[in-house]
Length: 150
Picture 1: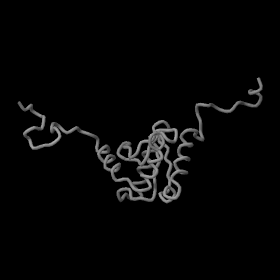
Picture 2 (picture 1 turned 90 degrees about the vertical axis):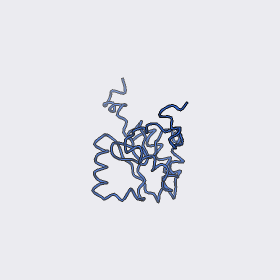
Picture 3 (picture 1 turned 135 degrees about the horizontal axis):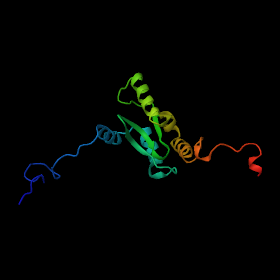
Picture 4 (picture 1 turned 45 degrees about the vertical axis):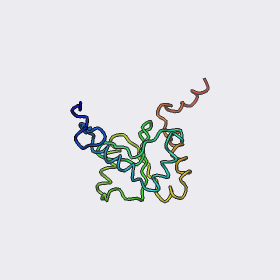
């Protein structure tokens, strides 16, 4: 007996059924993961698996955009500059960056040539930025003069 929606008898391999509906950004991100540039691939090898002490995602969709690398714990976006980003214009890039910053994301840009020259160094500096950020709001303000002597 063939069950409806199983794909048998329909000529479809792999089960058939209803294709899941996904946000368009997810499909684009999946395609970009398969076609990463050499600098992105080199950097990803060093960032994946929390090797730097922080968990990064690659080609991650945020709103209508897909960012190269994303660390959720710090709301940090890492963009590798120097490769083609879908033929976008300067105005589109500015709108993209404005959207990301207005939504609370920090953006760090690294040059593709720097990644090719020293991928380990770039990954290490990104890891240290995430593990020990320059601004630590949870620590509070420094003590006033004389307070630390009590």
